[in-house]
Image 1 (cartoon, helix red, strand yellow):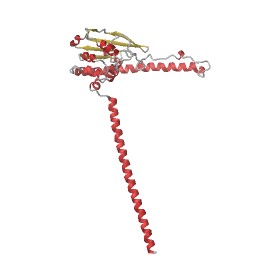
Image 2 (image 1 turned 180 degrees about the vertical axis):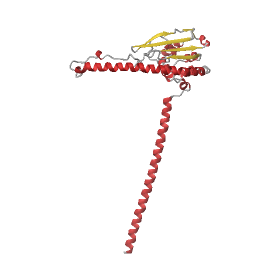
Image 3 (image 1 turned 90 degrees about the vertical axis):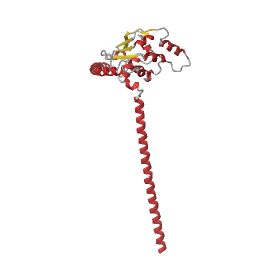
Image 4 (image 1 turned 135 degrees about the vertical axis):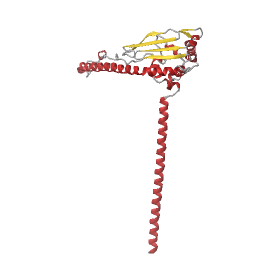
Length: 277
């Protein structure tokens, strides 16, 4: 799945000359000035993108020691990356065969923003027991971007052991018409071909999983937590409003009773006056 690189790319420009307008269009007299202004805006956008990327790289460097400390802890937790990946909502439909292999994934590494266009490299390193399934044990995919187009410049070719290829299981699953949700394999991402109708594993890792793998390992959905907090707050507000309404109703009832008492008192006074007469 190819991505629009408008977020970090300094190449995200358009050429108004490519857009045709009718000769009687009211914009025609102003077209030249409009194009010149647009070019100036685009140059500033390019400069802004470069400066943002430089700042991002500076902070990426500052994060490196923290990532290394985090990796030391992850290395002591068997199956950390397997659990983290499979618990991401977008990866919940991977085939079970993937999980058996990912249990041996001992290290996941990301080199991000390798140039001003946001190119990146992701490395999967597996333990020796993964040889039961495949070779080599280190898988690398390097993705670059040029003129908003994604290009794979490096991708490890996986050699599967006989009967251990999870992609074959995926093919069988997709051919089963009884399966409402087609499964897919994470290892399909390790290809130079464009993947259609599948999650972009590289973007999921670099944008979400890499920055906070703990939340996915624990199965924490930040959006759901926000919704729960909002619902609780909303319910509390409703309860407060109900209590206020009850208080208002009680006060109104008291006022009505006082008015009735006053009215009864006036009537009694009137009767007494009549009797005296």
